[in-house]
Image (spheres, one colour):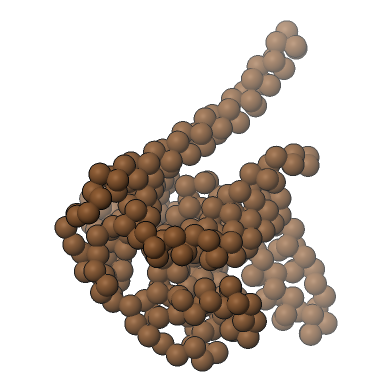
Length: 314
């Protein structure tokens, strides 16, 4: 059955939220995908898509046809993936132009908002596996959180904008895009390539963007298959690790930091920061409530239909 137009628009809006998040250092697009309920659908679709490309590249030159590649493409839920990708691409370009400068001008307020958003979203991977956490799970989560905390405390560096370096940075950043917690733009900032990448988007530097896109494709092809396999075969443990990554990476969003990412005590407009922190958390809670009600409604419709069918047969 065809999906209604509103469904596509809503998925494009979800993609726009993910793309906007990726333009802000410290905020992971994967985190937003988790919050909006499309994370596993996105990873699954990307996994089938990369498999189709790999099979097509290997089968066609050998005269084996395109049957395997077409089968993988048919497994992709295009009604979800296409609107998501369109929304992500449009929002990323606009956010690089509009939102990134606001974050640079008002970092304390921006990070207070995002800190509350990510903190509240920890509930999604924590509760998403459907299994009770063991002591070992909490220990693993704490170890992963400590690693993410250390990584996000590294001071910004500088790297040359050589095409090979740009491609390598793209492959690393795209892994962070699909992994909740660690932000791809934050890793670019750590490598000293965040501003050159934003400038390349704004100035349409297609040479730089082509090298970056090539790295993204290669990184995505390798990493997304691994992540898809982990979600299918070790779902609970994967979400435990994701929870730790998101918790540890909150350091990157602490509103009070020096230029070398050293943590400072709250100062300045503390009241405003706390209000924005509460607003960010409230947004996530509201999204989760709406998502929960929508799921309950979808689960109730088949039951109601079955009940009506039984009454009709009586």
